[in-house]
Length: 354
Image (cartoon, rainbow, N blue to C red; front, side, top):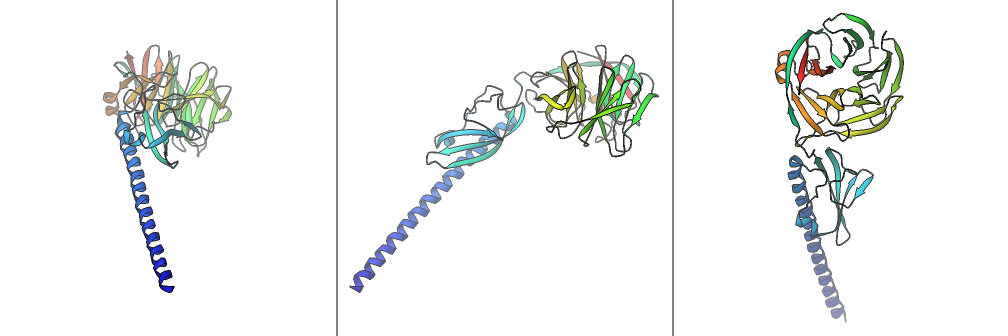
């Protein structure tokens, strides 16, 4: 009797070991399959980052992924879609941080983070310019905002302890009026709205409002929460338009700049642009320079597409000794001609443009 129980116990133990081995083998195969699916998906996404997509394109995921999935969705923070098409309801121009959710036929869900770049459908034009005149500029001015009204330049200068708003006659470097900011303020972009000047600060999360004639401080405003910093500022006749050093440009309610009306993300046909800095609005387009690059983008304000690009390398290299500081950072318009200058530059250039 004891012998039978012993044999039975050994057989049971052997069966358990076999079952465990089968389970372990099956589990190992499953894990390897999951890893294979995720690796294939990662390889596909990595290969598409530089190529990018356009609105309306379908994400043609590898067969290795789709054949092993019951469903696939893409999540964007609190939004999710199972439609694998680049839809502007979910995607913006430029880089989009997403998560792929692959539900296997077993019910298990595999997830993988990825970046999907969306580019403009049409190539941006190469825009030409010709220098027609040069004006003096104070080389001590760390230009952050720059606008011409009549024959008067309104300029916002940065650096902690040196920040100010000033105005002077084009062709002169002597201020007509000037108002300094507190030591802890780093001034950024500025723009004219009627008889007022609006000015941003870099990291103080607030802007200032001045009387245009005297530059007397009239008030302050907070940024909308979506804006991390203040960089460039302009006005389209309806809304303030601000940049914060990202790929985004924000349209703010001029009567209450703490309220965002809408925003656009900016990209060209083969390249996403971030670190958008000084801004100017002219005849239906936004002009923006890219921080530490000698280029100015011409942007469609409706959708963020870059329709044209100026390359001011020849002007910038004459004025840039320190590529981290004395860089192109001033855009204004004198009629249909553009005025360009930069941080610590000794000249303002008037150029005719396409």
